[in-house]
Image (tube, rainbow, N blue to C red; front, side, top):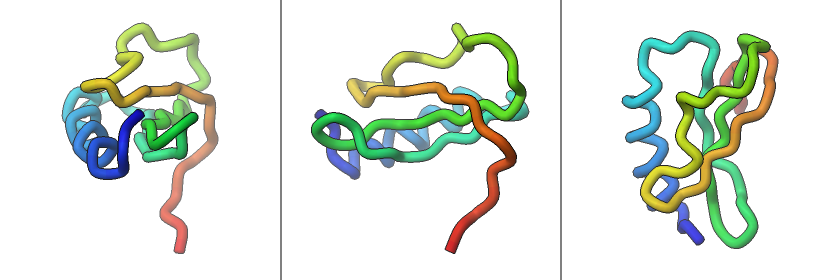
Length: 72
C-alpha cells in the first residue's frame, strides 16, 4: 500500500526515468488500498517492457490512452 506522498515521490522518479520517451504520460491513480501510478501510452504500441512494474513499492500500471490534456 502506498500513501499519496509515496505516490508523488514515485511519480517524480518515474518521470525522470521516462524522460525523452514521447507518448507516455504519468499520473497518480487510486489503487487497491492506496495510490499507484498510471502510465498512459498514446503511441499505441506493444506492452512496454521498459516501464517498471513498481517504483519503491508503488505499483505502476500501463494503459492505452489518447491525447493527454490538463483538466480543471
